[in-house]
Length: 444
Image (cartoon, rainbow, N blue to C red; front, side):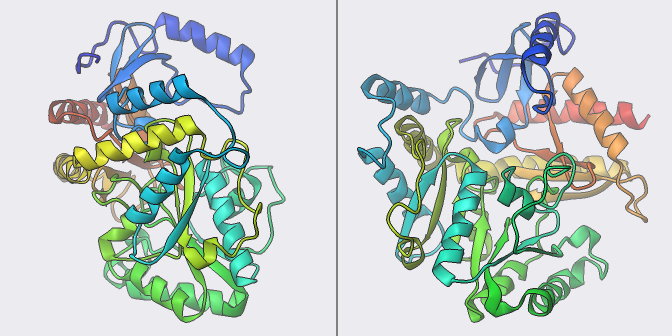
């Protein structure tokens, strides 16, 4: 295991990383961008080491993927054992028990005590695509409703569901049809104010679906219980339960996209658990398998079983190595009580960010739950004009000082904090010190 210490051996990026970046530019499509071009050789806990010997504090977890930490020993042992046995057969040809065991775990851990089924895939976007397929097939209805600021993937269908044009949708259309968008319950920016947001947003959403789509035409409403790329937007209490009730009343399926918010990230197994919301279908990926590519759709048995044999699947879906990693990652979450750890991390982050917000009006909002926390930066607290340039400057300063940070938001003005749940309190505080130093330098 790497010593859990930030080390700046060179400038960041260092000369070896810069040389690698030149090779990347010559070999890799320019469409595949790199936020922080330091080339990693090792990682564990809350630290990643690059080719120049720099050790950076990780506040990103590969975008919420390495929830149990890079180099988790349970995951390493499980993957090693599985690779030694066999690497692939295709579950649809000759199956294996680890696929079944992952599905059993998902059926038990996801919200609700009803009978469930699961199917495994490779990525979050693929899971969303299949959830839409299942919803349309089971209901016989065509329309799917998504939300402003939502992000659901980079495939054609999921780009259509995703709200943000650049860089995800620009000049990639036309997109799949029968996809509709409604306003998100965004307390910080809701025109009627945060206190009125839940009631007003629910009324606006349901009125728009009624008028523009029609309940009888709507197969599903898909929502991230806490939006990810859109800015870690947390809907106000009561909005999600109200939406779930309305969908149930009209025979519309509620799809919870928990790709980023699932697997202990918010302090619960899934973000839906916070208000006891039970979706009809749930998509999962990212933190599910300790860094291995795996995704899933879990849902009501009657819906999942409505699809004809052969209608779901894929060559690599539920690969045995990824399944072994998932079982080890879930065991780690259970044995190490990572739900509690996420809540403790959230307490530290919100306390530090809250104190920073008291000093700087540019921090318009601090929000999130568990170890999924964000701060939104503005040029003016009254107008709430997004401060994208400041966000970029602070992010650059963090990188130069050895802290991996991520930005997000429809307007490019939100910091999202997604540290691995294996990170120590000491590294958390040191990372926040780096953030504060970078923020102060950028504000001037």
